Amino acid sequence: DAKTTQPNSMESNEEEPVHLPCNHSTISGTDYIHWYRQLPSQGPEYVIHGLTSNVNNRMASLAIAEDRKSSTLILHRATLRDAAVYYCIQNNAGGTSYGKLTFGQGTILTVHP
Amino acid sequence: DTGVSQDPRHKITKRGQNVTFRCDPISEHNRLYWYRQTLGQGPEFLTYFQNEAQLEKSRLLSDRFSAERPKGSFSTLEIQRTEQGDSAMYLCASSRGLAGGKYFGPGTRLTVL
Image (cartoon, rainbow over all chains, first blue to last red; front, side, top):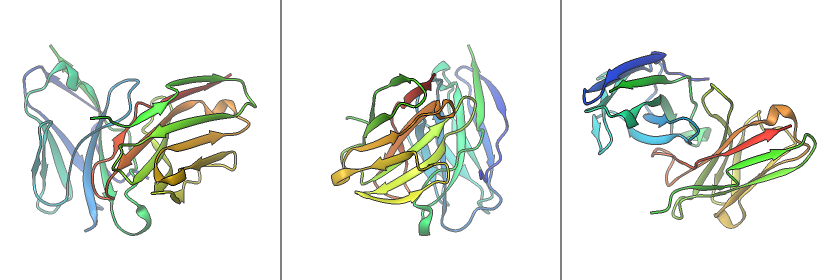
């Protein structure tokens, strides 16, 4: 069962920043926070992941709350190609979870020109 | 830089037939996952391999489904006696470690008539 909570949909304008929120109030110490996105008829695409500290890569930034019960994916300048379903996932890397991902419904991001 | 590849991309079959899908992971990735995705839903975990060992299978993987990963390289997913309910996108992902990002292939879309 998915353990994260995300808004069903969000809208943004092109070239503006986008902040996608995610709540993961049941997160444990060995859970990483992963973000993936999926365009229609394509496989999910890895975006970013983190454990406790904020993370940056060429695609996005991940801001993790101090208590780790929530996080925000930040797209600094949205483009039309960023329109997708964004999934926030608690990824347990320990024990017999084997790092498998449990996807929820995700957030549908619409980017307006 | 070659990503995860899957073959075929599309498969149409008649109910009762057997089908086999192939996944070629990123070469240095020793972990491989299979997922299934139906329309409007997030991907659901099916099975996991670490090298050639199949370490976990979901309850979704009925006895008609079998997966292999000989020599810890490519993997195959076979569905015997297909049913209309098997129609879905079958996704393969690979990773180097348990905690890091999972890289997905483009998927195989199965349609059972």
